[in-house]
Amino acid sequence: MEQTLTRFAPTKDGVFGRMGPWQTVEEEWQNNLPSISCIPASPPEGYICKRVQSPKFGNTFEVTNVPGRSHILFHALNTEEGTRGCIGLGVRLGVLRVTDEDSGEKVYKLAGLSSRVAMDAWLQTMEGIDEFILHVVGWEGEDYVAK
Image 1 (tube, rainbow, N blue to C red):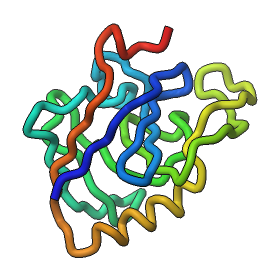
Image 2 (cartoon, rainbow, N blue to C red; image 1 turned 30 degrees about the vertical axis):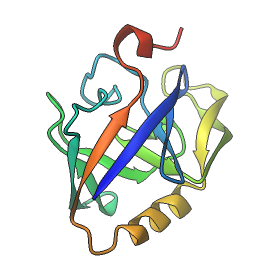
Image 3 (cartoon, rainbow, N blue to C red; image 1 turned 60 degrees about the horizontal axis):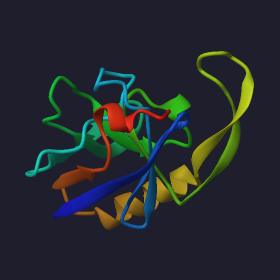
Image 4 (cartoon, rainbow, N blue to C red; image 1 turned 90 degrees about the vertical axis):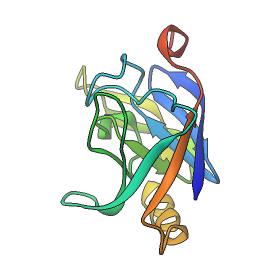
């Protein structure tokens, strides 16, 4: 099985994309630095995603074979404030008022909404699948940084 995550909006609020019917939320591009950056666009063969049981997020998938990175999970996630380089799923895009991780102030940010609903529904579609190939397409490098 293969899935494609297509990024369409690198913003100061994170990187937004689409994977099938789901919206995706990731950290901003920070040169693939662990825990603070989204992952690079995938090589042509894609990234291998394996089913794992996360102590924090439960049943999910881990994106493997990302150079210099590990522990990249799919999980319920509304804004980039809640990720450490992982991929969040949402039903649709919207705006939420959150505490900014840098300033500590309440701010409005773009978000993936109904993330738990999206994650539960996606995992249902993945029932019986323990591994899949993920193709990540979109921007990276200088073109990936929100101006």
